[in-house]
Length: 312
Image (tube, rainbow, N blue to C red; front, side, top):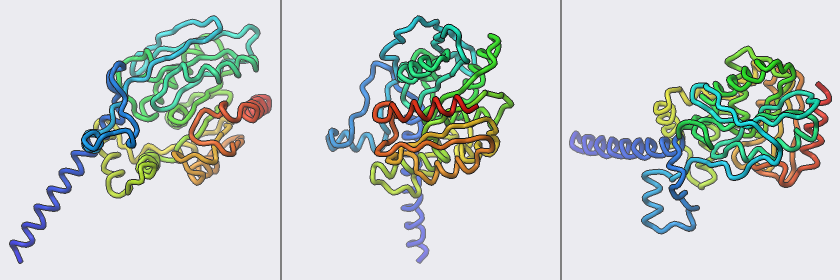
């Protein structure tokens, strides 16, 4: 019996070590982009058996996102010193009603925000488009899914405020929305209003959603991956919770969500909306997933945004 217990313990220990090793590599690849010129890992159905095995053990290769286009309007390139040096594009609008600062999602960069910027410019606002750390022309290759990026939100807000601008609005999609929420939780900045698209409820929930999209069980690997991701990046991942951040957000908020979103559940969205403390509106887009809402819902997006901005 003792021999059996020893053998069983060794097997369990071996499996535990393997699981943690796999989670460690995946967590690093998830939060650190590869060289921009490197090749992105293809979708599972396009991989050979060897490539699938390699991906399973060592994670996906995610090249650093690069700006693919530029604004059609005259713009100024800014370098701001935050926790990392970040690059921004400032587009001034004559007789501006205020300035909207735009923040992108995971695996993206500021050129992905140009369409939204164009819509805000049509509404009469100046815009500041931001590359988070690790993306575009900003410093490094690290991403913390909104945790440390929240420092960059404050840096951008403080910069625009220092120019004398009083009407400052924050816009963020996915990770960008999460970074805005954490910034408001941690700091006493006072934007005129915020527009947030599809923020996740908690870091654990968004990791679980990734496993579900791959038809993989969430327990125990999601928790182990989140543990190592936090350790590698210097924070406790289980406490990264926009649902909790919402409880300290008192400024006017427009929360937007696509009802077919497989990355963020309606339950997470409703929890965030319930916890928001100030004036708030919820906009739901039908037949829409975790994507740029302008692609399928441009008219509704413009109506939701313009109505919100005119009401605050």
